[in-house]
Image (cartoon, rainbow, N blue to C red; front, top):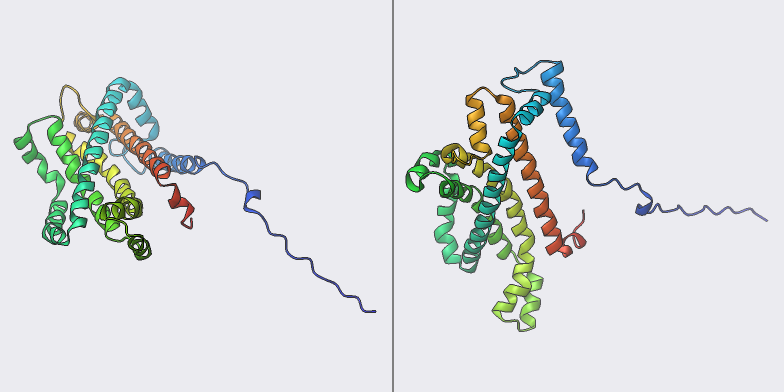
Length: 274
């Protein structure tokens, strides 16, 4: 008799056996590393003058000394950003819808949209004040010109890149043009539309700050006006506190938008390899 040994098949390791790290851990780790590097450069190594780049502890002290003033400015700027982003997104979507529905319109107006997007936005500030005065109108217009283009571009791209197999299946079922749009083209375009929205959201915050630089309301100053005012007075720590607040608020708004995308488009994560 001959001994025969049969090797045992390898045991597959299930993905469920891996330790799952909460998603919040990674952003917190990145934030901690960034703040530590900032503190190391400014406090330990002394590579930057405190006026140019104040250390984190000075920024925290500047925030505490002007907490109410800065938080009121944050509320103003955050509200401007959200309102401007919503208006720009709705307008950008409908402009993209019109361009996608007609190749003639797309050929006529796409170069104009590219030209408008290429104009340096900060150069429009003095003209906006002359045209629209001070306060919210020029700020909202600045937000609009900053962030409508990505929404238009992503909408046109999504609506004109419908998968051929889906369109063919809808035609085989004698779907009307309205049903083709609502059931096939629009759902297929929404992931691309959300790409444009996620690009536009940070630009809305940038537009709000630039608009406040040029046409901020002195009675209800936003963070842009506060940054301009405190830097002029040599209070760079308070100005950097305002920078940190608008950046943090934009991160929160961005992930709220990501959550909305996952809520409205659950099939995207299920059908993509990530």
